[in-house]
Length: 325
Image 1 (cartoon, rainbow, N blue to C red):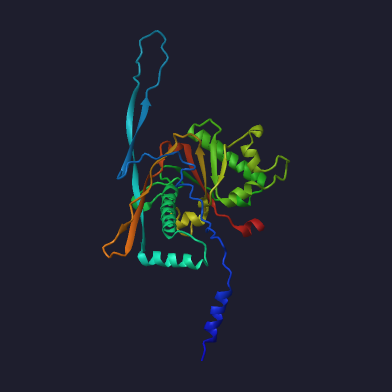
Image 2 (image 1 turned 90 degrees about the vertical axis):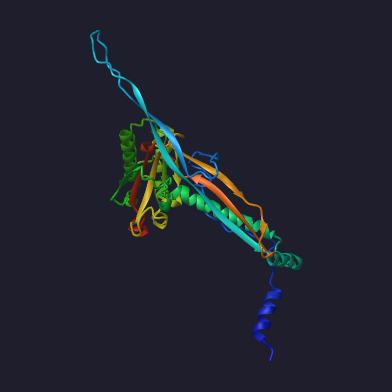
């Protein structure tokens, strides 16, 4: 008896129409790997295990001379060697002669768009390396005791217990203004070039309209030079939300805290060195049918050269039900 179910499936396949082009899966933006917010230089030497940076501290304060004998203080300096860890990340790709033969056969049938099989392998390899670099630079790596931009152990952390997401725009603006004033007073910074990094839900709250005046919203008032600008830029980062912070062990599971970052916009504050992604040449294995190559890249941890110019603020995570109430 004929397999009518199988025949039906065959008929559906025969009558299917194929898109003439592949479309790419949408992936997150790996901003940390590309050095978008961290000054990065590609001069890390391959094989480096740690990077040592010398920092000069000066001592000595001048006194007033009134014409009489007095003890004259001496100016001096000290050099501190700051160490930053460096790692290499690697990822391999494999294919064999049967994979290539199958790809060639698919081209002959012309049912699907023509994509080079080996190039697709390379795209997957590069994306995998970029993703891992992004995670290291953004969140560090506890196994190797590496600091990330969003969780350095050298940066002061403030924990806010009030649910600031429930604040009306007027109160939210005043709360942020207080944070900025405290940051500048305690770090002795007087410039108005502080950058503010916030999770997506917090960014959305900054766009809420003021209710007691017509000055717009907290975002506009914070960033507008004509209205007493308080921050240089406000940047939205998904990685600052509670689920990411817990996923990458910045917070313990169940902490339920989002994070804000205040960062002084001076290139001396943060720095990173990296070794650009490279790969070996494809090699045919001993079995005579399998090809393999390895991709690799290197990075230092984020170098907090002036950690007092950065501050973290943990706030209760966004609760949509609380906002609606």
